Image 1 (cartoon, helix red, strand yellow):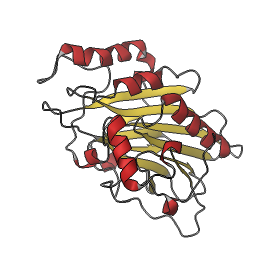
Image 2 (cartoon, helix red, strand yellow):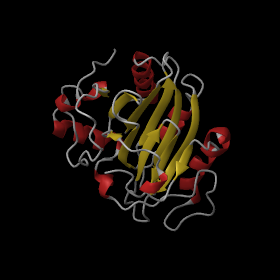
Image 3 (spheres, rainbow, N blue to C red):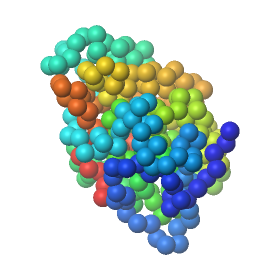
Image 4 (cartoon, rainbow, N blue to C red):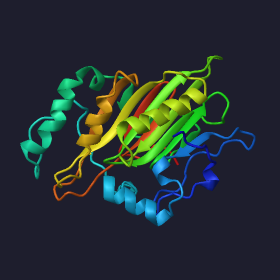
Length: 267
């Protein structure tokens, strides 16, 4: 079932405890961006949404306040960190081996600070929200999201018939299955003139708490690489503390790349 676009002001699912929108304001004359919540959230109260997310995927909103610890870039894991077992780490390493070409992407880059991100006006994207912008017309040149722990930022890009850059970002918590959320991204990009966008995935976390990691989400998204033209991935970039406390990263996508960091990347 297709989603009905709604404005940011009418979203009734904004999560309790989520971060404020610190994005740089767009000019008053800027056109309305294409913004959609997941279908599963429509008509739910804020409390119901927060509870449903917590039950299914872990409350990513709470991880916005967590201290981040980023793993070495995918493919560079070595040894077994304190508090973890080899059995907890190996499934993620197996994904890296199976999809080695995706994990080798240079389009997704880890940066140490905001200065490493070549963007000036960034539209903030909430958890379980999908946003698509025309970077040439909508008053923003980038999309960003915060508190990506067990969640995954799905980043889409392409150009419309006029050659204008179209950017899309979903902060995906796992509330829907992988195929549904990628279909949503693809449909929204198509509405903006990009029939087959390039997709990049960043985020995810290895956890030593039972059933709290992002392995299944990562596996299911990567398995759809051909259908949805997934071009690159940097996944399980965070690791929980030894006592299971989650950590997170922040993500910004521009027309030239996707950037992630434990540091704040925009205000």
